[in-house]
Image 1 (cartoon, helix red, strand yellow):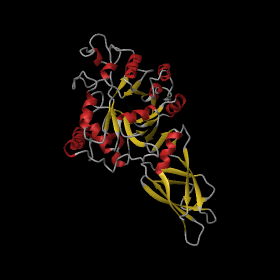
Image 2 (image 1 turned 120 degrees about the horizontal axis):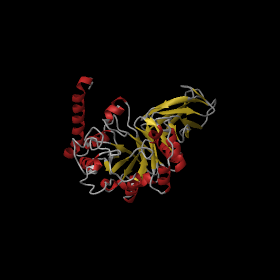
Image 3 (image 1 turned 30 degrees about the vertical axis):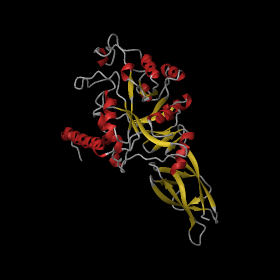
Image 4 (image 1 turned 90 degrees about the horizontal axis):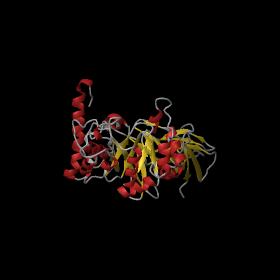
Length: 403
């Protein structure tokens, strides 16, 4: 469907109608299978299930532009295991058109829409303040309303409907403490925004450092929507925070990330014992995460290495007839197009030292060891990975002649 500017409203209606049919279909005919064209798929590791989650999305119940059931439909299409719709507590620009006093309503709508499907809807919200506090997502909460407090009756006061100096609010610390009492997993959203007017580089503030020290801030977004924050990655390593990647989607996933053209939303891969909300929560608090962003896998070596081992393997090794040129077949069972650089002593025959192992595919490489060898090591540097800023993950594949 091609949308001209003059027909943008009609195009939005058609797109939303299509997604609504997807969201509703599971209620009538069982949970639909995610689209094989766009589903985000990574293999389980030897010890954990690899769950795909998006912990930062919005609907019309704050400043998003779709109904919560559309977020569920998109999650199904993208093959997500879990999603959180994290509406702004203090920023509610659509209240004149969609009046509501319950900050849990988007979660309730999404959870009802997801019943019977494969998507777990996690409860969450976004604490929204000016810098240097900025925005913080709280996931696995019991009641979003208890994170928003005003003088008098919070349910009837209109002061909660304005974000800014006119609002009568708790100090941000009180909101964080209220979320902590509910057992929330909290992470710092788009931390590079705090200094984007100058350098755009994440800087640690006393507010965040103190909450990390007190066990009230557990993660940080190293990827949000279209950007990657290198300094935020370093902050995560320095302060022992979980690495988080999110779409922070407000419009349609199809518009922003173009999965029909091979794109994908940023997500967090959580290594969990089972596919349940409790297990996802345990994995997040244990910091077993890898971020999937623009064909880049970002994670600590301890978390990324098992995923790489599960994703890449040698299937066959053989020699070309009457030669000492080895042919080695490599299989990739992940969504990543791995950009590999051979770091061994031998020459490659079909490429230079760099080659691509496409997603969910198998390729053949040639190695010229100069003699018949029953085993050849393939030390690889995977240049579409990061285990710390500006440092790529490496692994060693072993090719063996069949017995």
